[in-house]
Image (tube, rainbow, N blue to C red; front, side, top):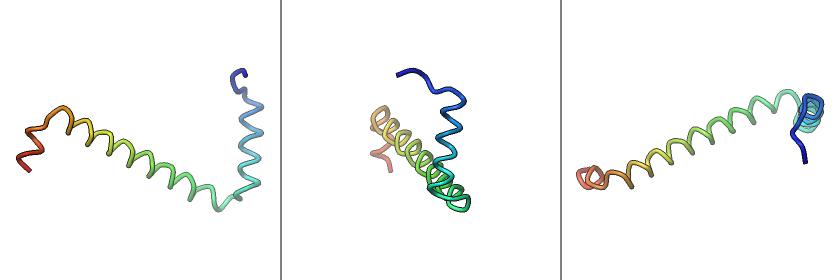
Length: 59
């Protein structure tokens, strides 16, 4: 499998637009953005817990 070119990306975007419609796509992107934000926050919290256990004890 090679890399995706411009034509393949356009075809994928058209298929997504046909499947979900124009009104549903912003909702999907908002949900995706929220999911990424929550993932980043969770990984930051876990990283601080593993690197600084004394900080957790004082809370």
